[in-house]
Length: 108
Length: 115
Image (cartoon, rainbow over the protein chains, first blue to last red):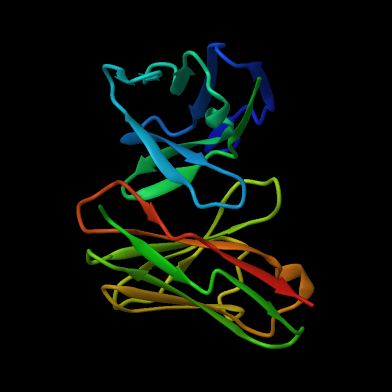
């Protein structure tokens, strides 16, 4: 079983749609969680950290479910500029592990 | 904010030559740097983790004699791909983290093409 698993997609959604991605992790002792965004041929950039209580940043909402060992990312009112690959990152004792990424394409 | 500079951004070389990629933290001391490889349409694959002043820790399946990593200072790590072959063609990305932080800052990546 992979340490961090994501649905690779692709998710193709129209502008304005709401889309959600999930990510599961295998080690229950994992300490911190993040979503990164990677545009084609670019480096990943931090989108948001994921807190136990859930957190929101504009149209983006991240949730953590420790009991089921998954994190989620919800994007509301999708924009064309949201098209990218979204990477789930899990940290355990300073060892950061990446999911394979979920590819999102937002279409006009 | 934290910035990591990676150089060169792209390089084309002949098979059998060695290529060095540099990763510099510009405004913080990077106690730990990570090197990744990414093939087209695939995820980042961690190659190795390097802590300043000590030997890098390589992931399983990554040849340490082929991918030489040096992290001699708190602001610079280098990856040297020795005797490069076409199958080494990939996008190599570094990331850095300062002591106590759990957020990574990435370099812009280096695209290597081996002819």
